[in-house]
Image (cartoon, rainbow, N blue to C red):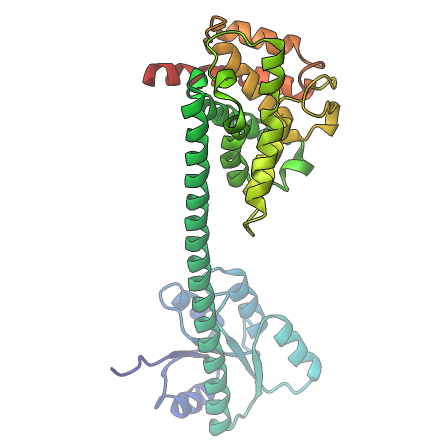
Length: 361
């Protein structure tokens, strides 16, 4: 199959220059001769060439005027432009190149030299396009691979989370709901620009998915404690509290066997800190205030809200309004007061998630 001929537009107000230029190039290229910059701009609305040969000294609109418009217009900005001029001042050449021209040919030009210069620049442009196509395809391949890895990680997280819920059927749906509550809080914080310095460093997709492992440590809790259909004794509660430490330990073991640890970093923070309290009375480490990672402070609200609105063998399900009131009362003691303020603003969205879950289950 014969290669498509490349298109060259030659712009000059001198008919002799147009004729000489066309005769020199027409055997190899489709050459369009254009007598002014104004006409070139009109033609470019319908047709885009592979290269433009542009005279500088033209009446009404100079080559400098034309190239400024070309480079400011999205459809023509990438067209290579070679200036043709009788000017020999180096400052004129520098000006042309600074405006975006790729070369500068002095008139009267030698046809063989003109041919060779055009051939060279079109080859460079062709190679640049091929490289760009390769880079675009490579980016698509990387994006596809990243998506596959992300989906695999998420599938693993979901499987582990389901194992936890299978053992702890008293809190069924808890992981799914808290993940939704977490998304709501994150969206609010991002919209308000809150904690921007911290959140801007997070890969949010990984963070939200990793929240599924916040209770993974319950896998290591005794069945007699985890599945007890009633209120735990103080000793049993101390055993239950260990799920935070067990969770961190489980995730650390996974970290040792993988190089991709972004989602695991967040998962370990969620697992180990979602029961810490703002005033330092939480567990397992008794962290206080901002020493509690932001992930854990957000999850604390999502986790407690869900626990409050859920029925347990030892308690009734609180209403949405009751749960909101309890969380507000815990502002500054159990919860980060700034986060409680944002929670109040999105509380209706929490309620909607809970309502839909009840209707679908």
